[in-house]
Image 1 (spheres, rainbow, N blue to C red):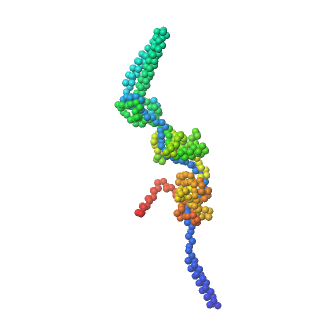
Image 2: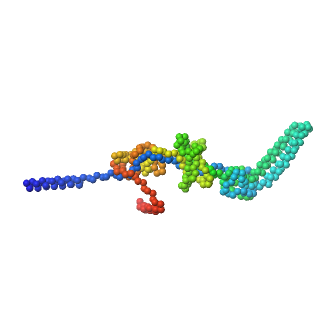
Image 3: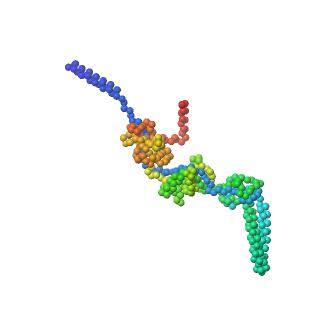
Amino acid sequence: MWAAAAGGLAVAALLLGGCSKQEEAAPATEPPTRVSVVTVRPQSVPLTAELPGRVVAFRTAEVRPQVNGVITRRLFEEGTQVKAGQPLFQIDAAPYRAQYNSAMAAATVARRRSERQAALLKSEVVSRQAYDEADALRLQAEAALENARINLDYTRIVAPIDGLIGRSNVTEGALVTAGQPTPLATLMQLDPVYVDTLQPSRVLLQLRREQAAGRLHQNKDGAARVRLRLEDGTSYESEGALQFTELAVDEGTGSVTLRSIFPNPRLTLLHGMFVYQRIEEGVRSDALLVPQQGVTRDAKGEATALVVTRDNKVERRQLVTERAVADQWLVTAGLSPGERVIVEGLQFAKPGDTVAPAEYAPPSPPAAGAASPVPAPKSAP
């Protein structure tokens, strides 16, 4: 009896030993890959279009002489604001004043002769033809007098418009000629100013459609509102209005000029300055945004993303992206609200895999005054 019991115990020990060896030989199951996901939810997103452009003066006038002569005085201070009609330069007026006096004397003689011929015509002492000739001479003399007066007035060169005047290209003593190619100075009206940007004609068509549909934010006059970002990254304080003034498309480039107008009371915007126009296109109330790091491009250049299904399986999706909104893509097709898109761990996941998703937590910005970490030096290749 004891022998049978001992034999049973030996058999049990052998069986247990065999099971332990089988357990040790069985391969361990790998845990699912951990990935970070973003759950896509509809949200209200203000849409803007940022277009590069340049500031253009509202009005520009190049000041040129209309008579020949020597500049005797400059009557303005460079870089200041001048008014229309304000004297800018004085040309030596002596020869033109002499011509005016001579023309006045000739006009006086011709007028008196015409008056005498008129009296004699009433008495029928002279013929009608003699009177007509005398009266024609009077008219010619008066026209010559008016021309001399105009030339005398032109010796004082005045501002044609209100504006900021630049540097003078001539000094006292310079000989100038009527209609010369080089202007004496240039005037610019910089309040308000235009901002012009060159864009494909499709952009103009899109903006016109959005304006007609009422999607563009408009001011009280019904014009689309525009903001400016200056070259140093700061925002301009006043908003402008978008104008569609271009009537032709450049046949060579297929582009068209879009023009906006901005108030400029402080003269912050100068002619030729490079800026960015930010056109407010409205608010998309049901926008689906995906971080750009979660969207890749296939060999055809089409946008794709890896989506985690309800059973934590990875699935590749073809997306349609309309535009970039900050560091995210606005997706118009390929995703539904509530779906999860992988944004970290893309290199470890492939379609069909089972993953362990965790909601993505974007890194918090560094505290003010905190020192930036020094990057480690790159190793030599």
